[in-house]
Length: 227
Image (tube, rainbow, N blue to C red):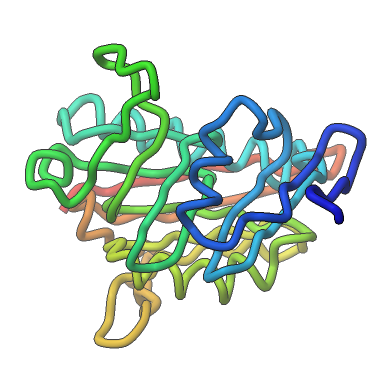
């Protein structure tokens, strides 16, 4: 009887992951793969081992982090984290590693978000975030279109995430959209006359500009206006 599923030489998934709790235990164990992105979304394990696109993903993510990290630090708003930060929600049947996550001080102080400590119990050492972060950003790749545009937004909404941002630089037309919570799902924020979209989480407006250089590669600027 098979006990694991070997997808690649160093990617072995146990076959006894019957629930979110099982997946979370595996994700926090030493047996969990060190590369790739592996999420659990509504009972489905989603694996993406493809390399991150340098310009369409990497430099775009860096620009978003640069601007938001500065705002968070200067105003002491909370914590901005990226990549391997695991976000889990029992309500949403979700465990994922978003591109960018913002967690306000209010979220942790109120208990809306709980930092899960390492199994060793060392003070100040945490390996997972449980609950509803204030904002999540996903950057679309070739293998994540349906996931980023349908499955993850639904899961993040169920988890209680206030804002969902999505960016897609794979084509000639740069896509950047802030979504806020509606009654039943996320609703896109309409841009103002200058193309800025308001973020209630950061109390500011943002516009993502992109242009290609002489070599045809993207250069991004995330512009901000304080309310």
